[in-house]
Structures are given as structure tokens and as C-alpha cells.
Image (cartoon, one colour):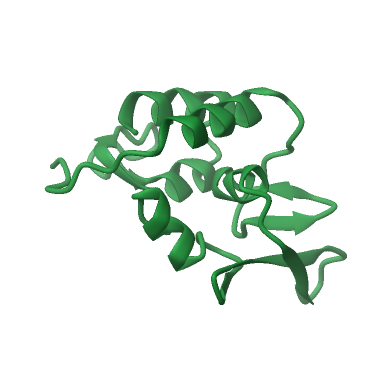
Length: 136
């Protein structure tokens, strides 16, 4: 089912985000916006494009990387976009899609958000960029 609200990014932000996702400059990871020394989620790449300040939150138990938290208008986040940024860009913190995307591993359970596409391991940054280009 499609969303009742149509999410639309500002064109200049969208263009920069698409370029960054397709550039090969970022390594893809899951679970957090940015794992220092490991990589970024597709939403973390957007935080980088927006040049948000970030700080180390913690070391994940049993891992050598630090989780990074992004700040925007007094709110911080490490797993979804800071709420003010999402609001200002006209999308949700999870990157809710306008139209579901088929899930290759579970066809009866489509993806509804960008974080799901990213964390599934089935979609590269380039493929996610194509979906963003089509839907936002």
C-alpha cells in the first residue's frame, strides 16, 4: 500500500545525496547511521551531505568501532535521521518510502523504508540511490 503522504526532498539536497551514494566514497554498513571506521547507512550518507556535526557515542560491546551520533537543531540520533532534519527535508527519520519495494528474501513482506533497504544487505548504495531518485 502506498503512503497517504507524498514525501519529497528538496531537489538540491536530493541531487547531492544521489551523487554521494553513487560516488563510491562511502562504505555501506547497517544498524547505525555511521560506525566510525566501518561505514555508513544510506541515511548516514545524507547526514554527511548535510554536513551535520557528529560525536562518538560509545563503543559497541564486543566491537572495535564507535557509533557516531549526528546533531541537528538540538536533537541527536545514531540510528535514524535527527527529527528536525527529517522534518525540514520533508521526509521521515527512517526514510519512509512513498511506495513499497519488493523484498527479494520475503516477497510477501515488502520494504517500507530506506533503512530497511540498507540493512537488508540486498540493496547497494547505487540501487538505493535509484529508488530515492524514483520515489522522492
